[in-house]
Image (cartoon, rainbow, N blue to C red; front, side, top):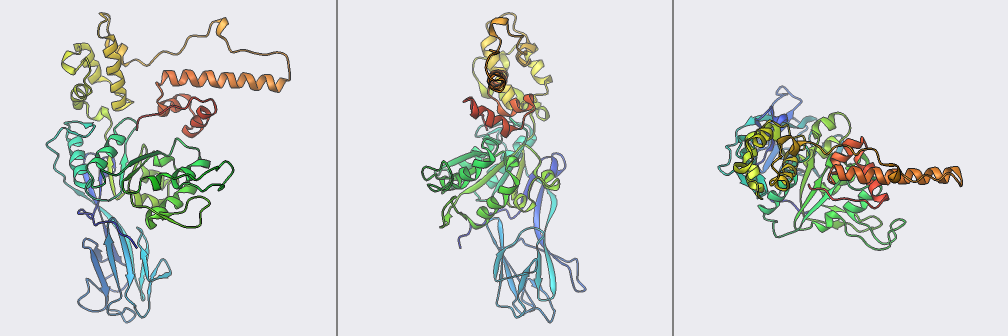
Length: 454
């Protein structure tokens, strides 16, 4: 059995709204005693080993006739906890199933003889001093929330712990993942990025785990999946909130066991990779709504970092403008442009700011340069003149003529949609009011697949 190296911070740290505004919080794991006259007592799992039994030299002493002198131990291995029975008389049970050795998951009921304990997290606020630096990798900011993020990322980067990055589109989740990888001991290994929203549900399992030749129709050769390609490095799963519910248990099992099966293969494949994930949604809220598995959520959120939207850190805009460089750093922008930038809500966050600066560089030599022109969305296309209307055939089978017109419309609509949104798939899906995966399938259908920044 392989184990990840211990993390120097045995806590689950959150930054952002779930940690009550700008405050930080740490999630410590406890065993909560449910029976005997000491019911409600909490035993923190702060050390590497917690020994449980009747003997007085145990860390948790359970003076009960059904408990052995040295009943079990709980070992912390990386960001996981392993329970091991020590040959007890009455056994150790997890949620009613007897085990010799098993991983714990939050909320599991541990039965030690006739004494029950619950494995639970507890969130408490903590303080993290902001970094003195105003950038980390591609991340830029001198606001306190950003410098706190820099300090936290620097602190957890050397560990092998899983990190959940939460934030709106364009806030820098991809840049944070790159920084974590570059600052980690795995920096010389690969950084494999997989967007869970960019692949249809029917193909995502093959993309993650790979497949053998003949595993399904169209599998003409062996394919190595993302988990296997990330061996020795880091796997960044973007848009994890779009992962289908039926695939979540398979991913959880692979992360817990550190092995998986390629589709169509009988032998398991081991992998050693650090896992980073990103979500545009609050995964805890998704869990509560039944759209995301709670056990997978706890497995992925060993550390959670919430990246603030640009509208909540406008003091960083001048620094970001200067960092993007080009021909128009902050001091050389016209005053009305600077005022407009500071007053704008930036729904597209840092990515939208970068696009606005790109427009500013191309318009810098125009005296009629206006701030609103840099921030205005491209106008909707005017009606096509008669010569540019979609071709309509009025002879032939009705269904064939109709299908051809629909295909022409879909291609034209998607082409214009991508042009307006500059290839930003998330924004295009919102504008078209289409599910993102459905939009991707349409783009694949017409050969209009675009790439999008993380």
